[in-house]
Image (cartoon, rainbow, N blue to C red; front, top):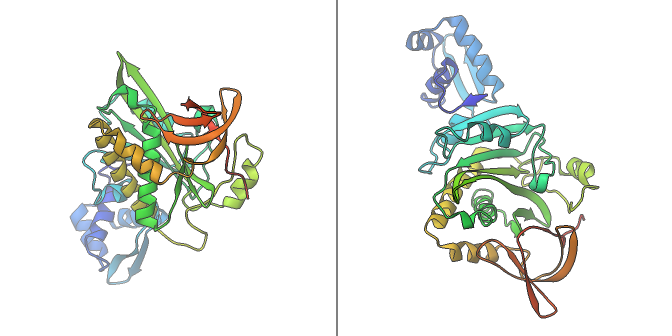
Length: 334
């Protein structure tokens, strides 16, 4: 596990190399500045390479970074992050059971805005107690929040969070994803991301909120579809990037954390209408005749609007029905 607040020798070596902007730093200079041995320098260079950085070494010249890592490491995420609070502390795991589990363990500490991110989850969580497949190549993260907004907005929050991710994807990857109620982000009719919220409420106030986010950033979509096609309510998984594409996930994560903070500010100010309007403009649900599964029952109707608490309003036989929990199934595997 790596933490953005770490001040290890490894990070000091990395910062020293980065500070020279692709120019060589002699091994002796590293030794002198960090007060470590030549053997220690070499060991840390090997570890840095294992984290995805390409480091060139030349006799009589030293070491230099020639390529940055594509891993979403804590110090990469916090560097140039535009938020005021969210993402200032980041925990990174190669493999973890669930980022939500780790977040819940540290949520009572002074960790508001902390992000937990993993390359792979062995027991990823989805909505309604479902399993979330989390292969290498995706972005699996949780965000701990101690929000100021009213407890009545908690059902709207995951929907608003999916809007934040949709905006971030548009800005960083130049794609046009859509939003499927309640909190799926889709691309070409396939699911590429979803949201989950765990919340603790005391005396009608939010004690803490943990947002779980799963993003199919650059995964093997065919393999994932094959493994999940028999799952209930599964309508197809996609990937934001193709195998041949190269992009740094850190930029998307930074953009999402910024947009998420803006969403939290809007909710703090009670400007729910702004979120409803933006979500609706990107929604593939509103205006469609849809089948809905909810609480063991099924119904068909036309989705006419998103209510202020995140409920989907369905019109059927001249009557309106509000749905706070459910699955809409107008998308199918292609």
